[in-house]
Image (cartoon, rainbow, N blue to C red; front, side, top):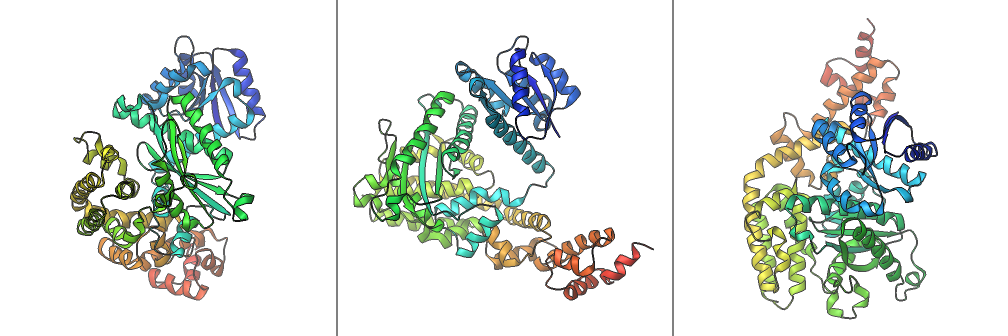
Length: 538
């Protein structure tokens, strides 16, 4: 049972929160209440609560100071914080961005449902942190962003690869239709903030986008860089006019959702959204078309008209977006193998294409940004890596948005390619070994499933031959042999328990038959499974 500490200087608020908790289905226990942060600190030391629900303004020590001290004292091992605010306290709440507060709730709008959702998110965040620190984080979780970047840019090698990766990430793509939105988080004062504060502000803003948008319609959200994002709206049934083939009627619905989210961001963080919305498609692998159109539509947006739809532009040329999928094979190989030569060759080919068509500025910017977003989302710690590469460059990597002609964009892209290639050269060997380490973690986390070279390679977005070569070079055993060793190790635990028959264990571990299981077991252990089981009771 998870423990919750309630901190508020008003007794009625304490009682009210406890009453709301009693109306939820959460398996939680209130381990104490406190009227200020100083008392709460003592209770945190004594009770070790999982979640602290605290007011901002309190005597002696306020909620923000309490969160700050806990972060310094306990780090990620400390409790999660949910901050209670009133409307006028939002400016004060911004200070908590650097304290890893998981949520902000308005007192007057608090309901059992809102409280339950907030606590569930906070507990989930704590759970993911614990798993990551103990090394048991499901490796496939780390590939969420890469999956969506591949989807947005049409970089999947096959339908099978898409299906396997979406299944492993537990992502649902059985909807009737999809609409992609490309957006920017904008604020008049955001660019003047120190980089650390910018990161915190935009991270919190994206978190709010992720949480608010799905309340209106099922959708997936992806951060592209510090300030840009993509939303994939999922229609369970097509709007009537779309189903009949007429002009689609989703404009108003999508516009309302984006406006509601933008208004909330303005109230919380004094930032808003500027977005382009693509066409509605009925197949998940066509989401890339909607995304490319959304980027084209974005060019027509402005502060006065912050939401633009591709279908409303009325210009056929606006639909001529750059298709990065044309370079799919080379780009995948370059990022898969950290190959600087392939990367540079691909970027040169793209630049030559636009040199011959310098009037296509929008498409040139689209191409450069696509490769930028691919880098940020595909590379481990991509945001930090690219920011470090551009640390001495005015405007950092976001200087790409300041280029005003196709020639300037291509000049930026050439420079980006050179910088990224130097990074590839430096990290090439380490990254290959890193792939093998992550694949081994994945195998151990899925040891009771059927595991094949093709399926595991598809999950990681690399070719089976390449994965087999990496295993042979950076591991003591080959891929299949490693899987067998891990499965036999797991079978020994099950055999020692004595609760299962040999054929049951063979089936549980994904062996094609009990005979084959026994053959592999004897090859590795020198005795049969039955003989091993008998030795456990001698």
